[in-house]
Figure 1: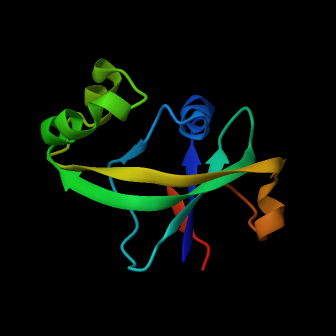
Figure 2: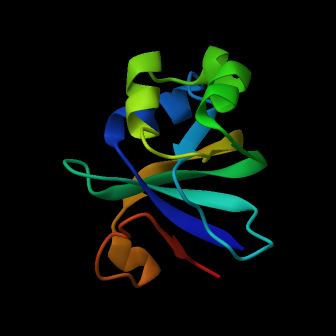
Length: 123
C-alpha cells in the first residue's frame, strides 16, 4: 500500500538528494501495510515528484527522535523542536530506496482533486 504525503519542496529536494533520510510527522497513517510514500511537493511546485520505500518508523519523544536521527535530519535543531512543540511524541519515517520521477505529475494523474492536508491512502 502507498500513502501520498504533502511535503514542503525544500524537504522533498533534500529527500531525493539523499541528505534528509527521515521525514518527520506529528501524526501518521493508522492502517498497516503501508510500504511506500508518494511525495507531493507542495506550493509552489504542486506536483508529485517521486516516491520512497519506508525503512522503518520511530515513534518517540522529540528529544529521543532528534538524538537518533539528527545526523540525517535534513532540518535544523531549532526547526525540528519548533515543529514538535507541545507534542509529547512524534514520528520519524525512515527514507529508503528513493525513486525520482523523470517528469513530475499532477494530482490528476492519481485521480485526486486536491492535495492532502497531511496524507492520503492510495491503495
